[in-house]
Length: 270
Image 1 (cartoon, rainbow, N blue to C red):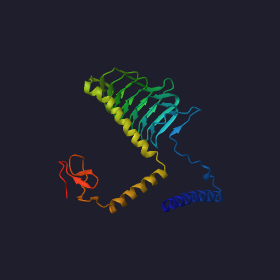
Image 2: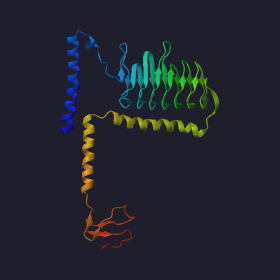
Image 3: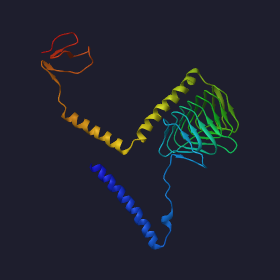
Image 4: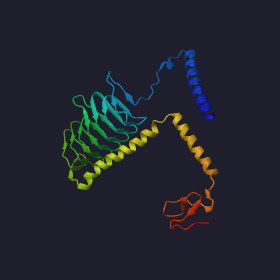
């Protein structure tokens, strides 16, 4: 109860200070108070076109999805990432993870299309490119306009894939500008899907944590406090013929019939 009161009191103090600042500006003849404070919006329409974000996507609290963007099922958009589809489309298929501080943007003459089960590591920029399914793009890479990455390919960290370059399926590319290094091994190809699914699981965990309400957090804290109190006051369970030692059934001491304690070998404990 005290927690709700203090939170409400804090909110009232902040709002009161804001309005007092406005009144002070008016008395001074200043128009500063008229400046509009813009709240952070994760999903933002642009020119009358709103993004489509599947309900099971994770969009971080400080990420932006703007304009004609389409995010398929279980897409993860991590912290400080911007998906900007203001002048063309950006399409991202299911189970793709776009990690922290990435920029995914369209170009005036072409959109940006990213397939399913794609992993894009932190700090990447993708501009009007086409990326097929099961692709891994290493941290800090730049994928330029018109580039195409076919399925089951890897772009090494820090690479720059030039305009209209084509990365064939099953190859590793690296460098500035990026060029083929070698063919992928079977193990590396298999790991591409595993990496994407790991990202999906992590995105779901982040979604669960970041989208909880204050009420949910308060309820969780209450439950944890109750458990702590029970743990302090917990007493061992005793059977009529001695101490009960919890353990896997058949591997140690356990209850066999009501009122009797036996070992796994059937010997009665008195």
